[in-house]
Image 1 (cartoon, rainbow, N blue to C red):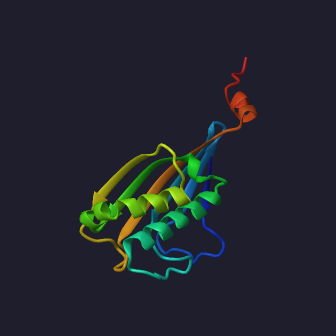
Image 2: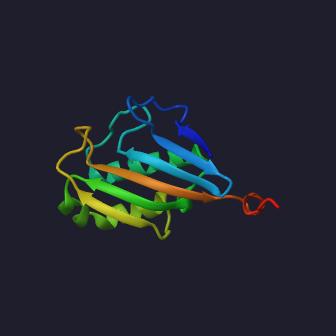
Image 3: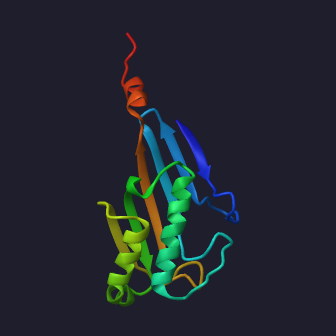
Length: 148
């Protein structure tokens, strides 16, 4: 089993955590993406609008996934932490359009939770992701070969 810290080269390095971790074995790779918020690669917010922050957070997720050669279709779980449940529900159509535009239309186990606050004052949403990239068939066959 190997472990890789995921850090897009052009991003500011986070303090006290990793943007993501990939754990690989002969069976494949699990990718754990830390909670992504609506700021850019340098930690700057460009909008206080929920939909704009969702769009940026999802783009951040995709960038971290790419560091492990994973794509949105590999996502198996998402957890959304939101400051305002009502705003999320009122803007669900716009949020859904941003989601389909960036992530696509895949079945993903999802949870959305309203929270009182997020660590970054301007953040309105934080999105955490787990993805699984299966090993190629040759790697899988080798992993399932038992010694005599």
